[in-house]
Amino acid sequence: MKNKNIAIIGAGLVGSLLAIYLRKRGYQVTLYERRPDMRKVNIPAGRSINLALSDRGWKALRGVGIEEAIRKIGIPMTHRTMHSMDGKITTQPYGKDGQGIYAVSRGILNCTLLDLAEQNGVKIFFDERCTEVVLAKNEMHFENQQTFEKSTAHADFIFGADGAFAATRLQMQLSTAQFNYSQSYLEHGYKELMFTANADGTHRIEKNALHIWPRGGYMLIALPNLDGTFTVTLFFPMKGNPSFESLHSKAEVKKFFSDVFPDAVPLLHDLEEDFFNNPTGSLVTVKCMPWHVGNQLALIGDAAHAIVPFYGQGMNCGFEDCTILNDLLNEHHDDWEKVIPEYERLRKPAADAIGELAVDNFIEMRDLVGQPEFLLRKKIEGWFYEKHPDKWMPLYSMVTFSHIPYNEAQARGNRQNVIMDKIMAMPDIEKKWNSSEVENAILNLLKVNS
Ligand SMILES: Cc1cc2nc3c(=O)[nH]c(=O)nc-3n(C[C@H](O)[C@H](O)[C@H](O)COP(=O)(O)OP(=O)(O)OC[C@H]3O[C@@H](n4cnc5c(N)ncnc54)[C@H](O)[C@@H]3O)c2cc1C
Image (cartoon, rainbow, N blue to C red; front, top):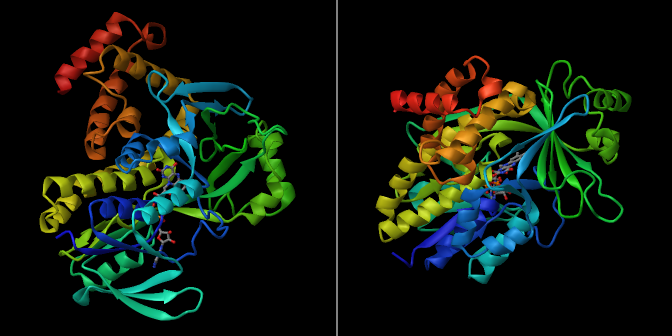
């Protein structure tokens, strides 16, 4: 079994990490990537210059020995900082005891994974776009993106790690009976902008926070970079008023930002230029089933489950796919016929759950986080969690700081929500939120709902 020859299509974050895991197990691994080698050419990031890395991602990186190296280039963000229209600032801790998520550069992370893959003996072919997979022959067809030459390769097993619009998934759709597939776009898109650094390279606003400007139907967020800049993302309706479609001129953009994000405007790098020059991205959730075909091909990462970015979990979920797959290979002694169906059985409901939670979290981020009632609710949950960590864990902590399967976290979160609705309806809750009366009420409701 160990002489199995494995091909991975897509050398993004998940494909590169998977290659390292499989190579370390002793397999012959070949990675095929459509784009040029990002370590040699300057490729525009395209989407999300930096990403929030949390516990599921860290665990996967630990498994291949690069957790510490990546932590060194990450910036911990221990809380959300909310900026209201009138300039008022509120904060909300992400977890307890200074727990945080980390802002990490997508480019550096991907390059580090590619380096490690090569050091471990993974063969990587760049500029090779997979155009077809002929499952009956375990055959892959490629077109070189520089020379347009066509080539063919074979592998005992093929992983599709080629992202949200995966060619491998399309092949499954075309060649597999009863392939379920859904792709749904949010009405919002996104655009990346930038906050400049101070002249000495320090950050112009608090560095160790994820900043949010919640405005009901839309929002701006900012994540810190090592060079003192922030990557700023506007999540905004594609159509309607206001929307990407409704802002036609530089003057309109300047006026809109000055009206709704006044404290952000002085921090922004050439707003009007960047607004019109930078691409507008769309936000898609992709679900499909099955994730594998026999003992020949399986999907992983965004190719299997693209989700919207509002829980900061897309990459973390793809990295967790790698951890779970590796655990299953250990458990079943590399018996792929057992491992692959089990991988799909465990990961499909987990990915569906985080896909749904990510959509829900958009409403929380763009709207609720600005509301006092929401902040009180989170404060009560945090307080009760401190006192009874064995009985309660806030949903955000389950998703971000634990390894509880996402689907289990979602189910527990729903039960806790029902309880919190009742607690928030108690008279004078804002005065007695940390009283023994509230504590006992939650304990009783937990018994009833258990
Ligand atoms: C705005 C935004 C913010 C985000 N923020 C976060 C965050 O904070 N935290 C988080 O965890 N996740 C975040 N995500 C999600 C994260 O970016 C993805 O989940 C992650 O990149 C998935 O990795 P992947 O390797 O599966 O796919 P990708 O990163 O898309 O990589 C796929 C690779 O396959 C290659 N490829 C595609 N087609 C072919 C082909 N036919 N042949 C060969 N190669 C091919 C591509 O060039 C690419 O290199 C965010 C996403 C967006 C859009």
